[in-house]
Image (cartoon, rainbow, N blue to C red; front, side, top):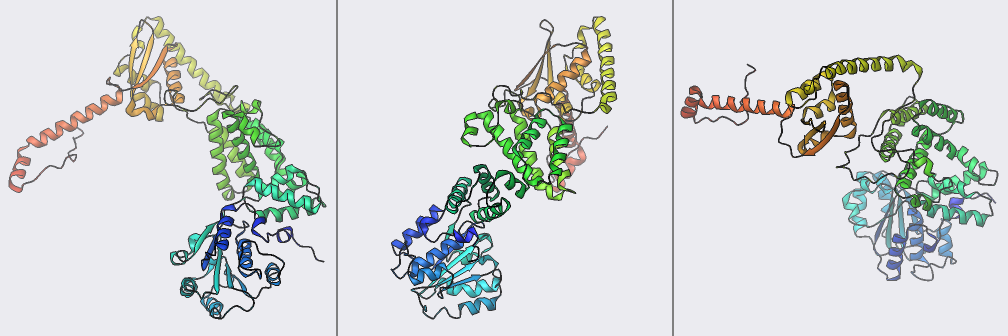
Length: 552
């Protein structure tokens, strides 16, 4: 006897054997038991979740010789014929290969004739969304008012492509992608029945790779049994799928936490030598980051996942919570863009390098409601340093030398007893912003700050109006504080405050000047005798906001 694939051998033959679609099964059972049978059913869902399987069981329930029931006997000639695919009154059509209108007309030409063997003539049209527009038009009338002995069972992976006129004539059932746990349980049940040795960790990997499809899971299981010589082992399953080992994921995460680019590239090189799938590697990295985020919020949540190699407190403590969220997003985008890269390895390397280069920009503590990352986690906004080669040293020394010169110059000013060197008003603060060469958003933030200096406490309060709080971040505040220290040549107490501010900032002062010029220009236009004459003779009006003051 020829070998029968597990997906075919273990295909459900009764509603009680269907896995993971309880909401659809219960509805069909109720319809059969209560004899409330619609003439057209549409089963929608991704591949391998049980659409045609449910349709066949439903057809068997309609035609069982013991009577219409949700529990067909499975032993009568009709039930056996349906199971073996030779029941003459179950007409199965693959719409993907019969899309033309002539095919549909041929299919419907015998609808008016009564069933040959069974109680109902059942038309099972798979991938019905592949029919042409003319085919749907040919089907509509029969689909709406079929003879009483005809039932239509339609299956599709893309219900959005079906015309509304078809959808409105069917009872629609949406089948869900199966949970990983349900797929794992079914595979273990089959392996135990087949008396095949397996490792639970290998089954978990296969269940995850199936992405919600039980049929895909059983096909992969068949392949894994062949690769393992009659056994299912984790190492062989990983090799078959091109997946990396857990210890490699932990190596990548540790290198990311240590900001070690050289170590990251070394791990990637070792991965390439083993011909792994870098798309799969990104999936594993995403799972690792997911588990770290869970651990930082509640370690028990990770324990409930029942991972073979759970995230440790030491590893979770190396990451800031913002880092984890940023890395996860970068990995997601990288997975989407990976097919566009010159090759998978270089695309994967760029994803990792982005994680090292980009830094989260945390909100100020007053505006942030993010829970702490737990013991050992890096503080929010902590400096992020990437290990670099010695080639960068001259640049760093040059910058340090420049800073020393600025500090030395400031120290000379302080020794001369200049107590007004601390910026205490709009003019002196703007002079600091210009001298410190602040740029970008940091400069924009600084220009919207109103300084208030208290000499008795040697404290500088930097007031930012709530209207501009979106400019603020801890990183930008630190940049301004650092630049201020260099400009003064000493440290002073700096206190950032976000509130309703009436004090002048350089930016507010400029805005007020522009507004005053605008109002003056509008006043001059309004008093101009020529404009007054135009208003009088032609009933003209000056459109608000169109007057612009001249540059002079």
